[in-house]
Image (tube, rainbow, N blue to C red; front, side):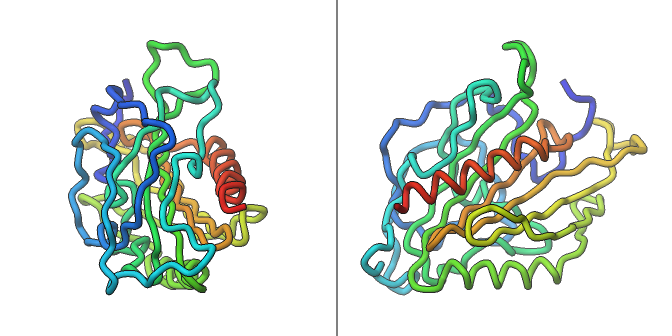
Length: 253
């Protein structure tokens, strides 16, 4: 196991007992549950659920706008990187937070939302090796120009958050375009001083990445978290993001 103390946002303990997803189940539109600020991550067993959105939260989907998100829209890790089966995850737990609720939608033009988590390992890892990390993927579908508007708001909010405090640790945020992914994409790198399980500085730094891509009328958010607060794997994340964007493009036709 890692000798490093987990970052407060890393929801990585106690997840090896994962529940396989029942294939083909779609999640109905859910536009008001991913936004509360300061929500505490839940460690309850993942479930496949659906919730109807109130008419005031989201407009009626126009023709061609998906009102449900099937499991086939989510990326699946290649066998050599898959530590355990992917699982459904509450959107509120899967979305990252920084200075505030940058990645929430506020229900603006959202027609559906759902999330899944992939637990990954290094290629060549044995069954007894601990995972290297987890990648949470959220998919939102929007009506009209909602997807591009979401990216615009996110860029503005990220620019206003170059750094933030998290349980006494200063976390810096670097934002840059991510080319060749979907219609437009953004990559964020979070960096903090690494600490031991006792809370002592090791002298090293740790980092993790968030990628956000728009594919047509859908937006997907990938939140990479290293196992037990260690650094994520940018190479694996880049592969997952590119595969994930292609998967959504295929789903939307």
